[in-house]
Image (cartoon, rainbow, N blue to C red; front, side):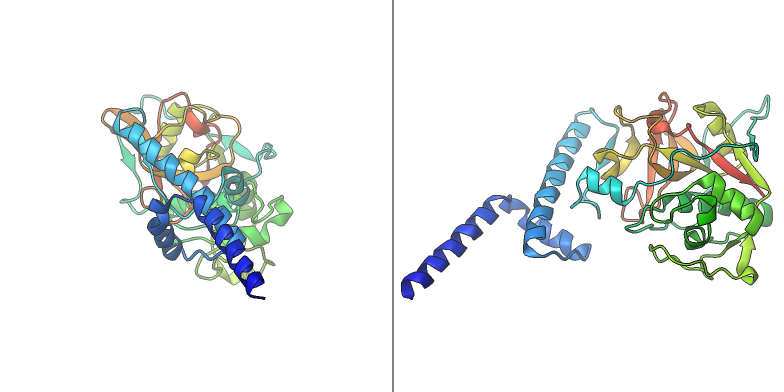
Length: 333
């Protein structure tokens, strides 16, 4: 019996040694702090796998930021709530919107005004057009947040009232328009649905980050729109004109890169980005320059702990990097 107990202890010790050898001990404190801050809980096996992924992301961050200090990159990255996810897991969890949106004659094309000199910088946030950064959670509902964001800006422009609109309403009530809640949706179809049915406020129809049954009450409708306008495809010139003269614009981007997942500050430029294969919906709320390099001011829906207080500066006039000018849309109010 003593021998068996001894052997059992040896086996446990060996397994513990194997487990600990997988990890960098210098990162122990950081791992514990990160888990505590983000309230992460795992079982033993899953915890080991998450730790391995987290360490890989930490090493990527260290390497990228070292290269940034040497001038190789125009932006920094940092650990955030997505640090224990692989890129495949990250994309499957968050970056979902329906890429093949049906186009029909129910929208109009935006035309920039002739002979209008655009300002060198635009930011609609201090002018009251933009609600606080929201968090879609573990749900592929970016399309709903981009839709509410662009409508919130146009409602403010017309009424002077900034009303936070309900993403959950769009998730639950627009399935007939082809939307799939946490599994993706259409921004144009969503705006056309709002044209016919209106939309509730966030306060009357709060976000749950889960698919649910439609519980809309017509008495809670707070906004609508008259139609949809599309920005000419792939034109950053037209997108800039729209952002400067109309307000925040709903845009689609390629966000399926570790550099974007872990973005922290600076001007995001990803040479591997596609301008065709887009997987994430965001909101362009302005543009500006930093060290003579132009950028778009983009509001994300991953909470304030991501990026620069929930925002990212994306490279502007760099051959439509990440497809930011591929699919711009706004509602007529």
